[in-house]
Amino acid sequence: MGQVQTAELHVIVKDPHSAVVRNATVTATDATRNFSRVVTANSDGEYILLSIPPGLYSITVEATGYTKTEADDVRLTIGQVAELTIALSVSGGTTTVTVSSEAELVETQKTSSGTT
Image (cartoon, rainbow, N blue to C red; front, side, top):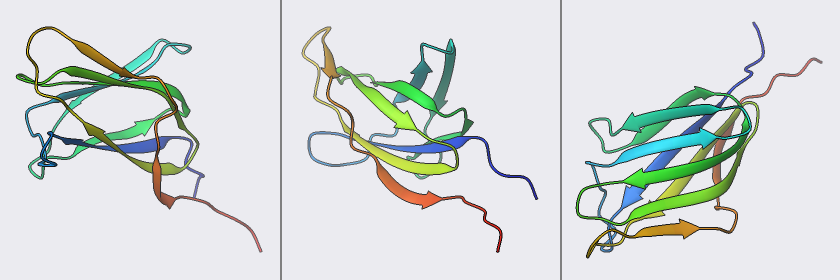
């Protein structure tokens, strides 16, 4: 069995009242590799980016009625299954909120293989 060479990111998008936002578009971009992936919610309101190359990503979330929000410097490593929660603000116009510090990821699983 081969070793996993990709990562997985689960994004949870919430409104100001901590309710899950199901109508958002989530884009993960690794500018150094010119790689981008766009996802919409599954039936449970989850945004799952499967089999993406490890790297340093900018995660952008857009939804009608909410301010566009970006989380920069999201680092994904080989075999990582990470979870990122992004809170949206209600939009009063055209505004972009950028989270410039390293986004906090929750490691939910890590695929690893070893020999004994």
